[in-house]
Image 1: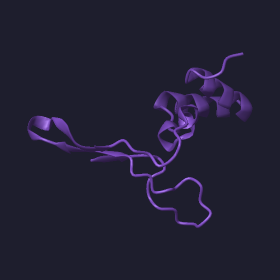
Image 2 (image 1 turned 60 degrees about the horizontal axis):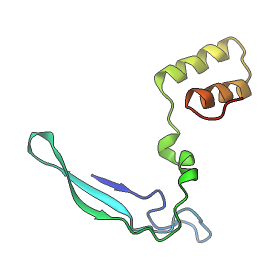
Image 3 (image 1 turned 60 degrees about the vertical axis):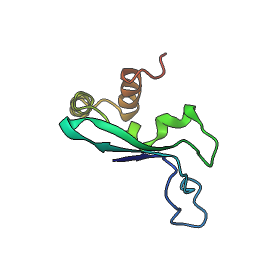
Image 4 (image 1 turned 90 degrees about the vertical axis):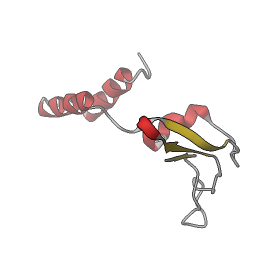
Length: 97
């Protein structure tokens, strides 16, 4: 199994800003009895890290079954989309007013 930087791989388009072929990654193998062992680590990123932007990464864009059901109920009861976004943001521990 390989976990790589969000900016890994080569860019498909010449003007792409996201894909810059970053070499940072972690490789792991599953051994006997289902135990995982790290086999290789490359911690060298070829770009500046921006931890405050990590919430925008693809892995953070999934919603739980509970949140999905809440959105369905809100849609049935005609709750505006902006209110849905605010509700999800607060449930995820984001901004508060």
